[in-house]
Length: 367
Image 1 (tube, one colour):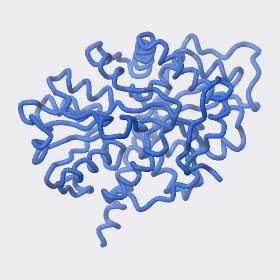
Image 2 (tube, rainbow, N blue to C red; image 1 turned 90 degrees about the vertical axis):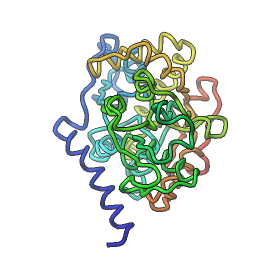
Image 3 (tube, rainbow, N blue to C red; image 1 turned 180 degrees about the vertical axis):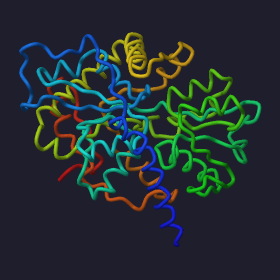
Image 4 (tube, one colour; image 1 turned 60 degrees about the horizontal axis):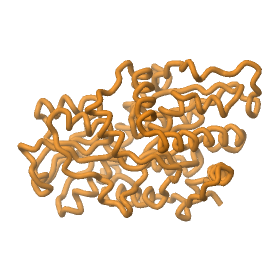
């Protein structure tokens, strides 16, 4: 079997496994109701919809969604249409929920968005807005890794084969002149695919020497004695790169643009409030994390993690295009056709109405 075929088959298996796990619980755990986010009695439904189903991860890089949920901003904009939430652990499961019609709108990283778009031939989703930039770091055991060149020969964790951080790390490794087989993770550096929930324990036990991970996992590793060796933001122009986008089912966008616009208004309002009230926003995001998972983050993890994330309405489309090219170079993605992956029409209308500036799609907008 050709190597490329074997790789694609392996990637398909990796993508299916989390779907099977989550299928039994409806593609993710349902977030708890928030007392401030009830449907107002007598409020008018948008587009006649009973509900809009919104998905996000239990990560601080999804802070826009966490705060929007906790503060009741999505519900406020949706009026008599109920905002329903589902919390996901991995991008493939959220894409599957979107494709199956059990989710309408989602907050998600760039790699799953690109994979979902290309695998459907550009038919199943659109990126309609930005949410966050940054919040990804290479954290290492300082006793084993004292400089960037010391990463060679070490065991470094990433969250999942082909996920956003996995692609970024493989690209960085290649730029150092080191070679790693993307499928097996073996080479001049050993890449260990490890769920963010278990990576801190693996790090503490010494089974990995470091990890290229998003927040708050990076700060959890620092709390376990790790040191930040590299902040991914420093590798990008203006130290900005997309870590979280907002996506929507194309059918839902076409049939219910007013509902989509309402969610985007709430997202823009959430980011505005986050940036104006960083301490209150940090607390609100942590409270929603606790509501969703049953456990809040301690201050020594929450504070540095939150500080490293920039919340922005700009989807930073040029950086998504670059990330896709990194996946191609790593052998994890065939050359993609991303024309049409963005539709920023409604977002730019919302931004204009709020007195803001339009954002760009890097030439990848829907024609």
